[in-house]
Length: 52
Image (cartoon, rainbow, N blue to C red):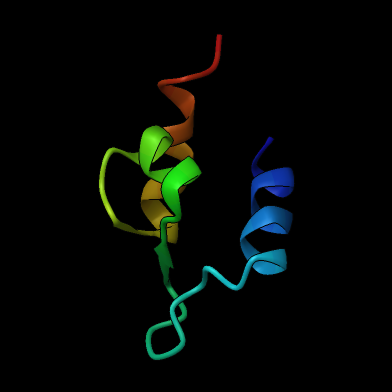
């Protein structure tokens, strides 16, 4: 799941240009993350809340 999410992030240019460790959420990812920007270290824990 994480690798598919990274593919989506890269395809849509959501990785922050200045600080590459941050992901800028689009409307779809805001629903998953609950905020406009997350670090790549938060990514797995935030996704885990939505998976069974």
